[in-house]
Image (tube, rainbow, N blue to C red; front, side, top):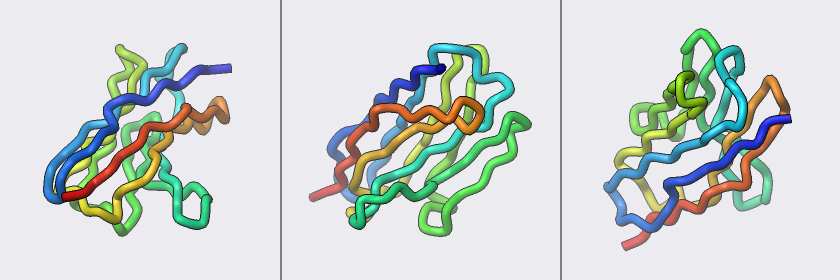
Length: 112
């Protein structure tokens, strides 16, 4: 089992940036990772994924604004979020496909 701890959420104004971090308790070198976020329907939708190879994919709603990256030496995955919009407001979760584990979530609020 792996523990995932997200951080970096907060309150920002539209157009500003945030960087979320997801620190894993074990090596993620061979793990595909993802960021999800909660929808108004209380489901989790994928925002971005990064394979162990480094290949990335993004939801259409965040393409060109968000960037997922990983630092295997630090067992950490990041989500750089630029040009934030009010509709990006929700809880963001880190997920490990290899371990099937979720983090506790971090709140992002975009409001003027």
